[in-house]
Image (cartoon, rainbow, N blue to C red; front, top):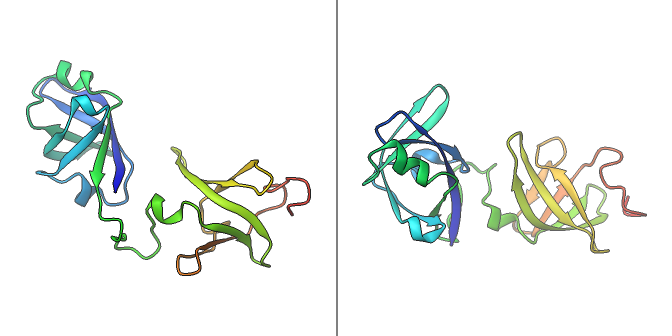
Length: 173
């Protein structure tokens, strides 16, 4: 299974370092030196991480064969994709891969069925569950502990405690 782990941003300096927008909770594992990553678009990869460092709170990566600013700029907005065993789970029991959450049933604490997780959107401020309602509409649920207090992979369900107005589809709450 393939997971997007980062997006290449701007070049940093003139020696081939790239800023990256990290999209994994395990950058030390997924973006470590020697790791080979597929890319989207596919024709610019695969890319092998040569080195990495944090500078001013931002991760900088250098890739094998990418030696100058122009080469990095040509890779800008490229997605970096890691191959992951679908049975593998994150080390932290409070973390989940997107594929683990997709298609889980979403219910309120009192058992009312809201819908199913269609996808997870990774926004700059926080992650959001996109829940497809039985009527075909969608609702965006902030993926924070106060609103999503329980995820039960065994029962294939996500329990939410939505604030008033979050789920306003006619009669859904």
